[in-house]
Length: 323
Image 1: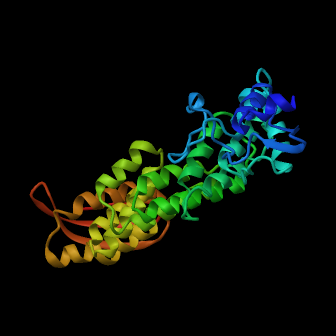
Image 2 (image 1 turned 135 degrees about the vertical axis):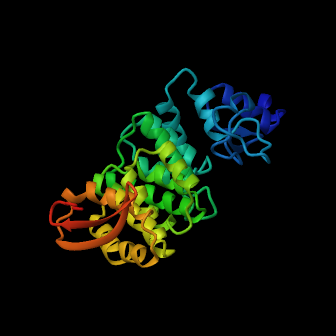
Image 3 (image 1 turned 180 degrees about the horizontal axis):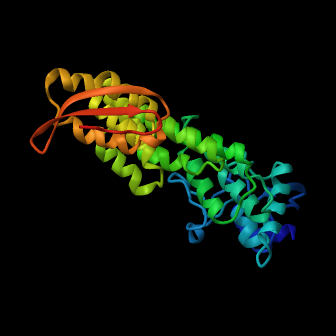
């Protein structure tokens, strides 16, 4: 054998070793012990060009077959993925193969071998691919895919942290509808409601109708929450009539009552602009059974059928009017 191997280049010997299902070997050459490591200098995750679709190859790679691919397709050919990861791990431990250092590809392979493998480890590895430690987009989309495939080992608390981290990233770019879509995946009802309403409050001062349309197009959230956000903007802008209307739509009856009794109705009377008051007054009347505050409001000269009537609105769990 010494004579046969003495004339062969090391790279050619490595090829024969791989074809024989071995990742390393020791032999004598001209009286000297030679150690050949077929995985030396190879990136752990990159494989041959003909399996490029399985694991992506970096643009600057010049290797034809690399570490894990050798174990998967040659050393353990015909075997299981578990066998390949086990033998590859042995070579890593012995220092013959480059360590994957918890790369996301390795974590996905381990998850494929063991469904009980922690999903958090996979997502943490995915987060390490970005230079921005606050970038959660890859981790969240990977979580979504793994969950769809049936991997449910992640704790609800960890999932919620992931949703909130990615939503915060989206809101910083004013992608409000996507942030709310992400938060809608929070499993706990109350936590989900609070998180979504916080985003609606944050966007309220700058949001336009098209922003809310985008939200409602992809998320099933109560219209009352949208109205509550619009109430914040209308009140901040001093549009008290619109604020009162949005408060009614949001079910915020105490706020609607205060605005109507203290601002909207007195202002309308003072300005003599009573035509605009009737639709809002009728809405207030319909909501009377849900308002428990007692107050007596006199609105004079509401026009009806060409006549001026005295309209008395009595808030005491119900409304009445008289001519």
